[in-house]
Length: 343
Image (cartoon, rainbow, N blue to C red; front, top):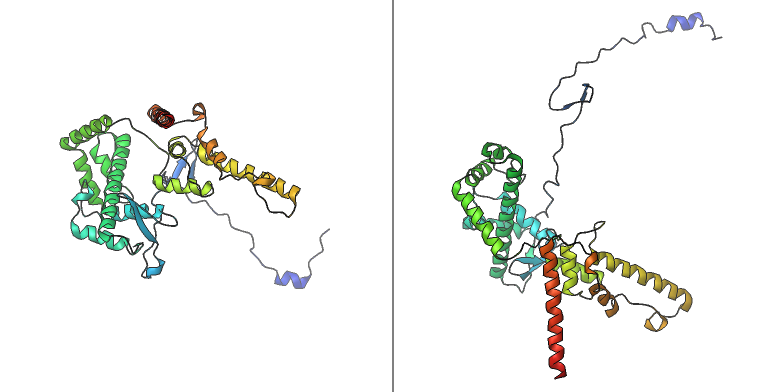
């Protein structure tokens, strides 16, 4: 039984402590509401857009030493010691954000705009001292022209897939990189013209005449960057070109190409062998004499070339035919060389 309150406690007890019943505010059905299977309405956040969205590029800096040193490796590619993919990402963002108008090509940009793009780019990176600035500028413009065309092509195809030939609907699907919506509206008007449609069909036919389309899984990184990655995984020894072709043109499994998976497996096996040899030999130095296999030897590289073509999943039949014809050409070249050698 609960203890009885005293007179003093009753005098100081609070009155009216019972909570008043609160009525629930009515829900307003709008874009932020979702109807369930039975018709009930529940509040929720607006649906999020799919895709990665705009990436983060390197910031500009006034300190020259903080800008990574870059140098050209071809007429359309730069590289640097760390994270070379940031170079192309920065050029792409700059050329799209500084679009002077609804222009179909980067080559139509005026010279002040091009110079401004290079000026901002050199606030993020710097050319190597022994490089020709004019050549570096031409490489920068070549990358900008390629990426500008690719982004326009991707945005245009996305509109065609979603809305067909509805030009007004295209104008509502503004890419994230277009800062001035009027530029995108002008581009949509250009895409809808008969002149543009005819030119697009002609270019498509010309591309098919040059040979089969070879798709790859390399992403935005260049083949040179992928070759550097494979060389690093192969203990500093450059793999054969056929291994690079497989790495770029075969389907990945668990996020890894067949070449990367094989290199990592070889490195893991070499580590296990080295650990077992260390236990047997004790503190002695490990070398080939006591049974340790070095993954950077020719045996590891020979294993890369011995991949079974039936186990490889190429992007399409054209890619596989190019790989097979390339192997056949190399084989015939070796046989031709050997015949002349023995003569």
